[in-house]
Length: 146
Image (cartoon, rainbow, N blue to C red; front, side):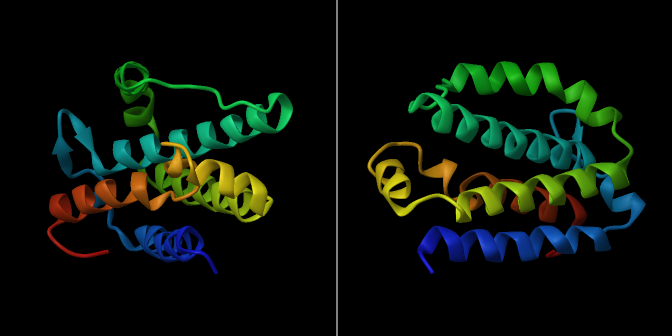
């Protein structure tokens, strides 16, 4: 298994353990007005966005480009909706979106993987690049490892 595949598998194992969080832990503040559940909604959104980016690549042969400014705008616009999710739904959506993203990545032809590895888009393959900082953020908020 390639490194990104192994890292994604390990990340999914950690994400699945989020089901053990209590309601109080899901409501913990993570900073900037976000709760643990908000972070999970954010993670689910970006894994679903990843699927659309792969759809675009498959259809058009090019990646849908996003600048750092786009991410800031998306986060600002999405935070209210992510915060409104019932906490248990945020957990379920996060895990489901991550599983779908990893399944899509695992199904990519090796030639596509090779193309991505030559670009600054490695996060399209290795989801832990996005998940890991958020998992650390969650662990800090709840005061324990997941």
